[in-house]
Length: 95
Image 1 (tube, one colour):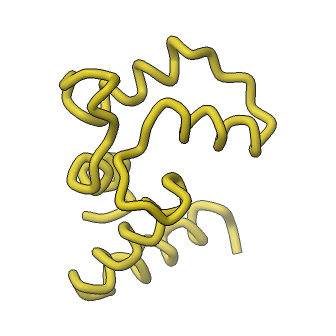
Image 2: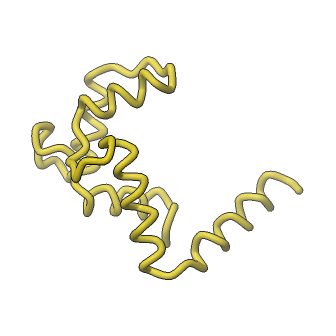
């Protein structure tokens, strides 16, 4: 199977799930960032994830990621569940 076909099949599988199932998946992914807390996702969480993935990401980039995700509401506000779901939708994870 070619990569484009694989992605197409994955997209079909993900998009065939119920809204409730999608919400549960978003909540589980969110908790991976926040280590099980109710959030929000903070710059500290993103820094930890980058370190675990052995990625060199500047604090400026992490701040920009938070601001992009929360609509510019401020770095200290972090990324809440609704913001996270919106990012996942914009990224094409859910339609």
